[in-house]
Amino acid sequence: MDFAADYHAPFSSSSSFSSSSSFSSLSSWSADTNPDGTDTPRGATSAVHRALQLIQSDDPDSKLQAAKDIRRLTKTSQRCRRMLANAIKPLVSMLQPDSPGSHHESALLAHLNLAVKDEKNKISIVEAGALEPVISFLQMESLNLQEYATASLLTLSASASNKPIIGTSGAIPLLVDIVRCGSTQAKADAILALSNLSTHPNNLNIILETNPIPSIIDLLKTCKKS
Image 1 (cartoon, rainbow, N blue to C red):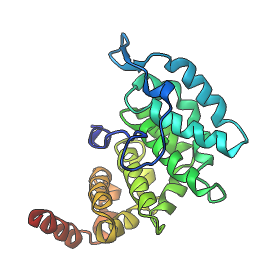
Image 2 (cartoon, rainbow, N blue to C red; image 1 turned 120 degrees about the vertical axis):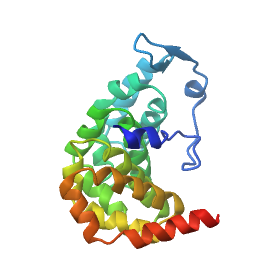
Image 3 (tube, rainbow, N blue to C red; image 1 turned 90 degrees about the horizontal axis):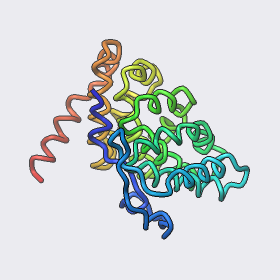
Image 4 (cartoon, rainbow, N blue to C red; image 1 turned 180 degrees about the vertical axis):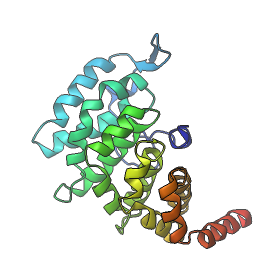
């Protein structure tokens, strides 16, 4: 059951989570329906090829623009998610500590959209080494990075193949910390990520050892009051 992907809507450049601007050539496209039932913007193929070229560039600005374009292209199009699977590894390189801070957010959001409702991309993102930097962002002071990283783990944890890997990565105690101290959105996503992970027996033991129940109850009480 791809619960996380169904729960978390793909991020777009118009989302409140981002201040990046959209290009008129992209925002003016209308949608066509492919034989597989997915919606793909007209001209998406050429835009995909351009994004794949830019993401391989050594120029930081070009890579940043590519990440923004990938996020936009994969917002609603399953076909674009498949076509842009080769961007996963270059996007992981943008998550590394030596990359500019602006790269971290854009690469996280691009990965998140690539993973939504795409099992192969979920697995590929983890295999490409994204977990280590994503987990490190859970400990950052930046609330945006915390939220994006938590949302990423929520979606990635929907994959049965990823659950044991995430469980042994050290992410579970950090997700519980987010439930205790994160933003409202991050807390909700962390609980759902823990729910996904709990379906793997070994993960359930790790979760219970962190004693998350009191924090979850506190959050439920807060939600009930509001």
